[in-house]
Length: 505
Image (cartoon, rainbow, N blue to C red; front, side):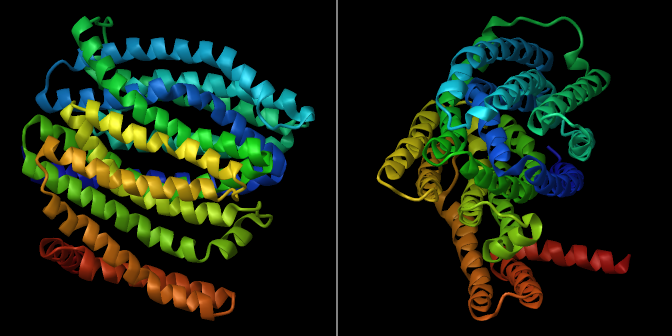
C-alpha cells in the first residue's frame, strides 16, 4: 500500500469535509437561534423530544450502518465482492425501514400520545411532527448504503457538496417559515420532509453516475446476508445503548421536567454537534484507511492511524471547546438572547463527553475492522446501557437535570478504559504505546491549556475585552501546549517543514 498517497488523500478529504463543516456549522447555529425565536421554548422542546422518539426504533439501522460501512471498506481494500455487499445492504435496509415504519405507527404513536409531557393544546402539532419524523427517518434508512459507498470510496468532495446543499435547503426553510400564516411547528416539520426527499435524490443520482457496483440487478447472497446481519446483530447492544443515552435521556428529562428542558438540551446538542463536526470530519476521512489497513494486514500502519486519529481529534475539539467551556454563559446570551434554563451546564458537561467520545471512535472502528465484535459489544454495550437506569434513579432521588449528563460522563470514562483493554489483543496494540502517545499527552495538554484562562475568567469582570482576551489565550495556549507536549518529534518536524514550504510560496 502506498502510504504517501493515502496520507495525501486523507489530507484532501479532511480539507473538503472541513469546508462542508464550516458552512454547515454556521447555518446550524444561525437557524437554531431563529427557530427558537419563531417556535418559542415549548414548541422547540416539543420538536426535539417528539422528533427523537422515532429514532429510538432505528437501533437496527444504526447497527446495519456500521456493518455496511465496515464491509464496503473491507472489500474495497481487497477489491472483491463490492456489488454483493451493496446489494445485500440495500435488501437489509429495506427490511429495516419496514420494521421501523410498523413500530413507529404502533408503539411509537401510542408513546407520543400517552406518555410524553406535552400540553394538550399542542398534541395535534406534535402528531404532525411525529409523522414527518417517520418519513425523514425512512428516507435516511434507505440512503445508508449510498452514503456508505461514497465514504468507502473516499469521495468526500461529493459528500461535502451534497451536505452543503442540505444545509442551504434547511436555511431556506427557516427563512421561509415566517411567511406562512399556519402553525409554524407543523409547517417546519413538513418543509424538512421536502428537504430530505431532495437530498435523498441527489445522493442516489451521484452514486448511479459514479459507482458501477450499485448498478444492475440486486444480488442475493445468503452467506453474505448472514455475515452482515450477524455482524450487525452483535452491534445491536451498543446501538441500543446509544439510543438510551441520547433519546432515552431526552424522554426522561421530558417526563420529569417538561418540554422546556428538552429545549435546553436541544440547544446544547446543537452546540455539541457544531464543535464535534471538526473532529468527525477528520475521522470520517481517516476511518476507511483504518479498516483497509487491517484488511491488508498492515497493523503497524493501522496502530499509527488509531493513535493519530485519537490524539488529533481530541486536540481539534479542545482548541474549539475550551473557549466555549469557559465563556459558555456570555456566548449563549449573545447568540440566543433568551437562554433556556440549564442550557449552560448541559453544554459544558456534553462537551466533556464529546472529548472522551473523540478518542474512543478510532478504537471502535478498529474493532469493527476485525469483524470479531461479540465480546466487545456485549461488554461495552452493557456498560453504556447503565447510563439510562442510573440516571432514572438519580432523578427519582430528586437530583437536578444536570445529573443525567454527569452520570453519562462518568460511565463513558469507565467504558473507554474497558474498550482499550478488550481491543488491545484483537489488533495487537501495545497499551504502553497507546497510553504514552495518547492518554498521557491529552491529559497534560488539557490541564495546561485550562489553568491560565480559568484564572482570568475568575478574576476579570465580564466584558467584551475580557471575552476576547480569554478566548485568545485559550486558543494560543492550547496550540502551544499541543505543539510542545502533544506532538512527537516527527510530527513537529512535519509541521515545521509545511510552514517553511508555505513561507517559500
